[in-house]
Image (cartoon, one colour):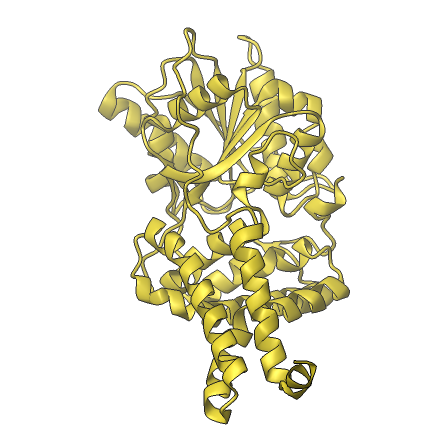
Length: 407
């Protein structure tokens, strides 16, 4: 037996290592590949619906607001609720357009959540633009004469909500005693590049932050999806949010960690009634979305970057390469081990493709997508060392804290 093991090729060992990695991912990583973590079942409507302020940070979003903002104004919510849009130094008339949309909505339907637009000015040193905007939105909510709202809905300007979205979120939080309820919005998938990259983006996020682990009380794994976060005002105050995470580029994960660290209960799942309407038609658009924060996720560590590149290569690139090389060279072990690893990889990706209503033949192409993500991550590190890290909407944050730094 030992003689047979010694005769195995390096390629065969790599294929077996990849196979072992996929066996662990399949069974030992919180069943990350399943897509059944949705809003908790059994939520009941409260006797008295709590007050909510919806905070929408917006910077140069005039092109997207006509699609997203009316969905917030038209929320069918039985309690007191309002929308605060924080115009973060826009140069395209975002604030003016928001007011026009609110006026049109009220004229057309005769009802709708009231809208307030505020412009706090440029962020102070040490703040990211988004969190500076969130700070002012929360501050305005606290300053209301009716008293601070019980809940805050933090949602991005490109997120469209079904009419019952707010009701469902509040009912889930109240029924299950949750301080933070977050949903991963269904991202837009229309063009060829979006089909190849977007479902995989969510798949990789779930692999890094398994939702089942996050949703256990007292779990160490913690994350949120920044496009849709319902947060108890008291939990935000107790956690010191947003001041305690003011310079975090990966602000959603930092927010969830701050809330959990202060004793709050959190929940994260896939959305069925919340959609991102922002288009990413070109590869360059998707590349910028990923590269702007990938190196921050690695804490700007060259060691972690090298480990990530090696891990992606072993887990995603090695299986098809080992299968092809094994067949070509007659290396049976490399061939079958590479084939098994690729088959398991493909099978774990199928549920996410179904969630996004995409053709299942895309699943075997996951190694191609992983290669693109590997290159985006390396490019993120290069941009950081060139002083262009975390660039977004005309602002650059060269040395942001990561979520992992805020422990």
